[in-house]
Figure 1 (tube, rainbow, N blue to C red):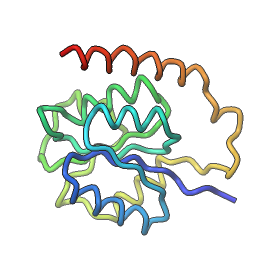
Figure 2: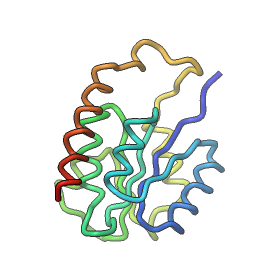
Figure 3: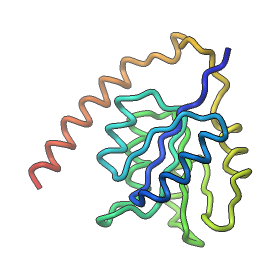
Figure 4: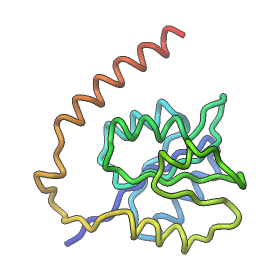
Length: 153
């Protein structure tokens, strides 16, 4: 019996998150949401996720590129998909994700196809390869260092 994939959706716009969650639930996915860089990294480290769907433009000058780069360090095997309303993203933003979808010109079917392609079929019970205590230790160290640094700013 396969488990439903869990998708982390990152967007600072609540309405966009609600629409994505409803759509992903229709696809048969479980969802988690985050509104900013800090909460997205916290959600990714505290939960098992199969894919992250990240908006490029976040509030307060944050970008999805920053989120994707940090997720690559913490969860290097997790597929990352960038959503953008921009016609063109910086090359460095494209290089840190597995796929890019442009809002308004990409269909829900395209998102579903990307999820099917990037999320591996998984068994209901995790295998030993699913358990990576080294990644958990790195995540805790990263959060401790970066959240403390943010508190000092």
